[in-house]
Image (cartoon, rainbow, N blue to C red):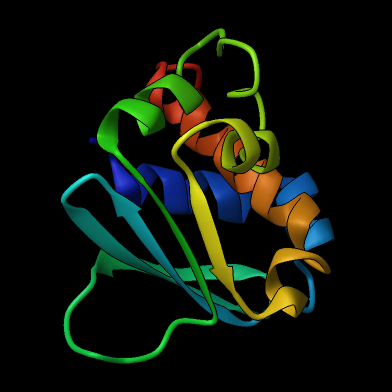
Length: 124
């Protein structure tokens, strides 16, 4: 779906992401339709984005059908797809896990989604 290496590099170069995530260490499980990915964040840096294998627990899990991800990552998202939180309230997104990762680091998570959107639309 995306060039994940480009997403990782772009996030690690992004001053807003690094500022908001500077103390964040987490394992995030992203499910984009049938695709599952593990995003390792270490001290505010994306260490890796790779396929999810095994039964290792995630600190935060975000999942949605592929169509919802496509709507979220559109260059100009439709209403309630502009941000992950309203997408969980009004569309098919589900977020679960430790609140310390979804609340304390929500600005970093929001910026990560924006970076995904930029990469998806060739804006970087």
